[in-house]
Length: 303
Image (cartoon, rainbow, N blue to C red; front, side):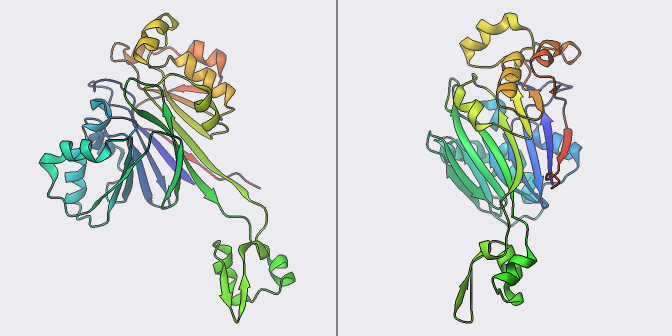
């Protein structure tokens, strides 16, 4: 199962009742963070999932409301006694941005590993997280992300016996490994059934909707997307600054056949009590206005 928390829902600047937009994922005890604006570590502490098992931070882009919380978070991680490397993933210029931000936090006792993305669609695996990064239109280089947790096919005892696979190596094959044993090669397909559906979560802020984005987020269990304004009269403004209306996010969700949409990255000019998503729900019924530290657990589908 995959736990997801929307740490904050604000865009541009933090408010007393709204932290900046970031998402935390937890799978098999390890964690992945997307974006790290000012105050991210504070809302993480309020959440209570801890810091030490954070392995990956993905950055959508390098505007301040998405990156300036990094130095403080690194110092907090250091204070936990962390020694394991931390992987940072982001658009071109990642190392330069991080080195500039971390002048005040360079004495951390763990390695920072950089994965600086080229400005094209690409996929990578870090631990149990399978990550796809897609360039999206904003006024600086920006990525949307999908994270997936794959599920191994079911182990079939009858198939293993039919293929005369020694029981001693069943576990290794079940884990997807090819095994050399007593002069013979055994492959996972000799004991495993059909591929099973995994879990997919998509995350996009600070961009305009595109066909490519719709295709990448297709069939997500959860789509977290900016809804900068919930009033359609702001369309010309979001187009100018390359942001997205809540109704546009809902249209993306509907066309991409996602299961659930969480809106986030609300304008600071939009007070929480005036976030009205009725128009969005008319487009995509399973639309939810995100709130700080909203959480969900996504289970693998029953067979």
